Structure formats: C-alpha cells, structure tokens
Amino acid sequence: MLAVMVPLSAIACGSQTHRSEPAAGGAGGNGGASTTTGIGGSGAGGSQPTVDPTVAQIVAGFGNTCAQFNDGTVRCWGNNLFGELGNGTLEGTVHPSEVVGLVDTAQIAAAGGHTCALLVDGTAKCWGTNQSGQLGLGSPDWNLHATPLTVPGLAAVDEIVVGAATTCARFPQGTAQCWGQGISGAVGDGTFEDKASPTPVMSLNDAIRIAAGNIHVCALLGDATLKCWGANTHGDLGNGSNEKEATPIAVPGLASVAEVALGQFHTCARRDDGTAWCWGYNLEGQLGLGSADADEHYVPALVPGLVNVVQLSLGGSHTCARTANSDVWCWGANPWGQLGDGTTDDKTSPTLVSGLTEVDAVSCGTMHTCALLADGTVKCWGSNHWGQLGDGTRDHQDSPTAVVW
Image 1 (cartoon, rainbow, N blue to C red):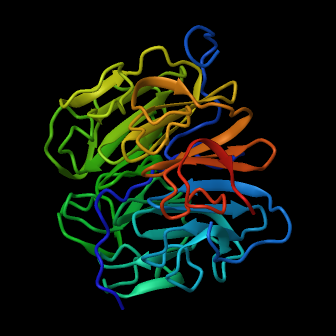
Image 2 (image 1 turned 180 degrees about the horizontal axis):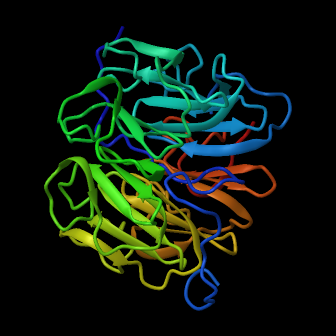
C-alpha cells in the first residue's frame, strides 16, 4: 500500500453530464430565458473497445475522466495514482479502460483521488483512495482500492457526488448523508471531524439536488433556494462571510435557482430565467465578472451578458456554461487551454469554445474540460498530463479533441 496524500486542489466540478436528465446539482430541465440578446442567442494501457459505445454521461475529474454508457458499464482514463480508474491497477492510461465489475450504473461522479457510481438498485460503489474515509467503508485506510467496493448500509440513493476527499448521497425524501474529510465541515453533521461511514447532514430535509466542490457542498432545495456548508475561506458559501460552516446555511438573496455547481474555491448558480450568478474566489476571473481580482466575493454576483444558460459546470479555477442553442462558453484560468478557445490566455468574461456545436452536456475537471455531443461522441480539451483527454496522447489541447474509443 502507498502512503499518498490527495492534493486539496484535486477537484472536479459536479455538474450535469447526462444527456437526458437535469443537471446534477441543479433542478429541472431547460431553464433558459426567452431573451435572445447577449451571449447564448497516448501511450498504451487500458482495454480498448472494438465498437463505438453509446455514452450517457461524461465526468471530468482531477486528472482523469470517466464515461458511463447506456448499457450501465463505465470506462475511465487518465491519472490512476490512487486507483481512481477502477480497472484493478494503479497504472494510468491514455485510452478508455473498463471499470471492473460495473454493469448496472445509473450515475457516476469523480474528483480528487476517488470515484463513485450510483447503481440502478439505489446502492453505491466507490474506489480509489480512502485515507479520509471517503469511500464510506467504515474506517479510513492507506490502501489504494483499485476496484469498486460497495458502500455498506447505503440504499435508496437518488444521487451521489464527490469532492476532493468527501462524498455525499441524496435520498428521495430530501435528506442527504456525507462522509470523508470533515475538517472544513463538509460532512455537514455539525462537527469538523472525518467520518468513514455515511453520516446524516443536519437540518436538511428538502434537497432536490446536491453538488460538491473541493471542500464545500451545496444543496438545491424544493423552494428553489440554496443551502451550503463546509469551507468558506474565499466566500465559497455565498452567505456574506468567510467562516466555515459545519451545517447547511442559506445563501441569502438568491431565489428561483434551477442549478448549483461548485469548483475549487468558487460556486455558481443558474436561475430559472437562464442567468448565471457566481461567488467566491476570482483571482483568475473564474466568476466571469469581466475582471480578475484578489478579493473574495462573499455574495452572488450576476455574470454579465450571459443568457439562456441551461447548464453550468465548474473546474478548479475555470467555469463553463452550456446555452440553449447548444453552445459552450467558458472563462477563468486557461494555462492548459481548458477554456477551449484556441489560446492559453485567461479570460474574465464568457468566451465561446471553438469548433463545438450540438453539445448535450459539459463537464469541467480541475484543469481540463469535456463535452458530450448530440451524436454520442465526446470531445475534451485542456491539460493532458495524465492522458485525461482520452485522445491517445499526453499532448495538451487548447481546442476540443475527440476521445478515441
């Protein structure tokens, strides 16, 4: 076994990646406004399928990417230092590799050094690192679990999300349970302690969606408002302060919310009028306000000029929005080309991803981004250090490139 630490920056956004379901972390379907003004009007390794699969969901993680298929199987590629690819090895691959023993998945989630799958029977399986108890096995350990393991005692789950070292599950009655790293309060049980088994989130009984960031979590409630908990150093929780919270706290002044998405130190919400609102860290322009600054933005701010938004997804320090006409607009940090505009320059306002049309879903990883297209193909761009773009190389790409199955 290896004694390794998952970097706190190892976060992937928890946003909608299914082509036929509402956004994970958001409610409802197309919430775009009718307004038409503004924006929106490989080295070797891994098993390689011999036929093109039908992708149902794409999830970009820290240095890896996973795809769920209509037959319930899952394939992952990229970094595998912690066993997060689930293929029974600790070897990374630039090609999609099948996750061992998964044949009935309903949803997948990836971030940090672990990955989880919700099964059609309402149970969940997780794999990868468990040093903070994020696999939910009842105790933490330093082993690297390279194949899926059932989370004991977890049933009737509606949704599962993962952060850097925290995992949460939402249930049909509107409650949630979290486990893993708790030092920031992200478990939501009123303590700042790690939990190795699913633990009820306090004062939450009407959640219809949840989303996990680096070390903070948010829930969309049935009345279209938000509650968040966990780390708040940069105003991540949107409650006007920078104090961490160990139980859910309301995001004031934000109503008619249709979706919430979380990044490393920032958070964004889509309202049902198709606008986007962001708060938290903005050093690289990830809030989309037209400028970058070192100030913390403690309350939600409108992303200017962005309309008809139907989905949001957040990465480490970048943000992407899919609009009603199936375009994708991204902004924020861009050193690896993760904005997909053909450059490596940071952008402080929404910028159209080049050469990408008919997008059904977008998913941001820490330093890369992927899109599921209407024809069932997948394109990724940005950092490819671990082969997470799935194009058979480790070359970084500043514009969308096709995943090679």
